[in-house]
Image 1: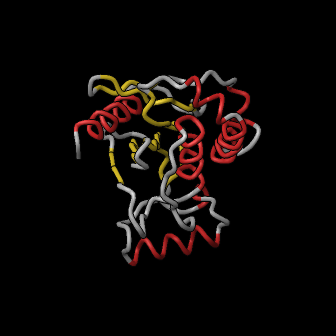
Image 2: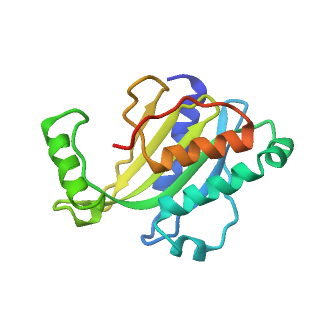
Length: 189
């Protein structure tokens, strides 16, 4: 990773590990990079907005709204704005990408209508996803009861495994705020 990618990833890990309580509302964070350091802001949204639908759906609506105001957002975006992040608590079931276990989990999730919360051996986790102006996607996850924060960084490329409603919504927000065109992601896993 490069210096900026390290700084963004470190800021996301610090955000996730800085939470001490559970059942916290989601949050949208602009990412600012200045002098090689990354700082997370926070969009001031009422907590009640997250109760109107699943958090990923609310984020998608917010991204659509941001797109409606792209011209104004881009005219007022500070030069340090580097991307957008989304914090939320999730249910997760994990397996190595491309493994037989991952395929089995995907089938179970599909049969459950995508509701990971209904899967056996699911784990609650704090998570934060981010997309930067280059289309690089970041994640940081902390499973409940564990101190370790797992981080990943995906660079835009064909067949990128990190797809879904959240990264696509973040892509749209980054485009609305910064006016950049990001590579497509393909189908939801």
